[in-house]
Image (cartoon, rainbow, N blue to C red; front, side, top):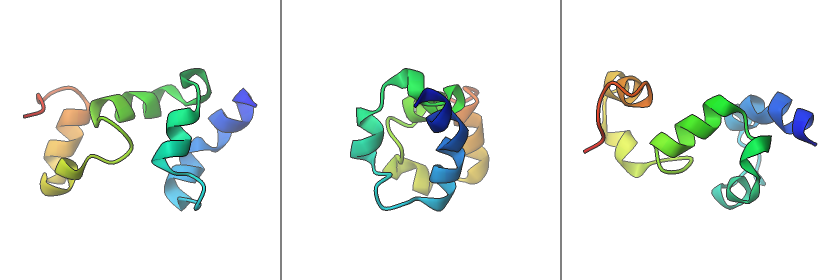
Length: 71
C-alpha cells in the first residue's frame, strides 16, 4: 500500500479525484504520504488554506519554503 500511495500522490493532487478529500487525506497515516506533501499540508494547515488564495504566488512559495512567517 505504501509504495502505491507514494507513487500516485502527486497525480491525485493534480487530478483531484472525487474520493481524494481532506477527510480521506486526514485518515491516511503520515508514512503513506510523500514527505514533500506532508510538509505542504503542515505549513498550510491542511490541504487548502483559504488565506493562501489571497496571497501572491511569490508569497506562497516563500511561505512554503519557510522564508516568510504566516500572519
